[in-house]
Image (cartoon, rainbow, N blue to C red; front, side):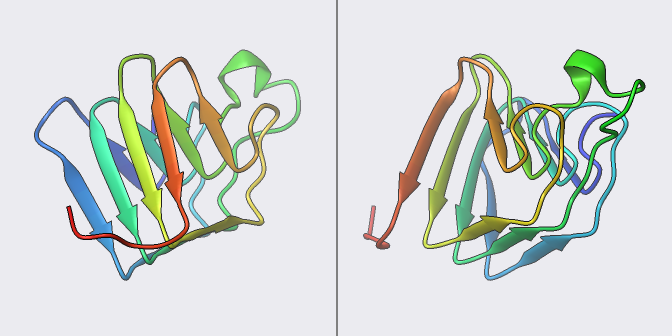
Amino acid sequence: MKGGGIFVDLAPTLYITNSIATENKSRQFGGGITNEGSLRVVRSIIRDNTLPLALLGGATSSGGGIFNFQGASVTIIESTVSGNEAARGAGIRNDAGTLKIIKQHHQW
């Protein structure tokens, strides 16, 4: 199971705006969000999401808050990623994708 709360496939860009993804659990990749496509998180909170930390976790216990796959793209704007747990990348695990974190929101 990928993405305990949200799974972003190869479809058009998913926008998460003024939202909270909290207390989600996954057995594999992205306790809160797994991104295999294009994702924008704007003025949102990704908090207290988890993956197994013990023997079941292994290499797939990655990205407690967000896991961004190779070739995928995630942009985080004016958002908070905190309190997430995983063996690798408790907050965010970027696996050779594109990751942008922007402090201030700009019109695109």
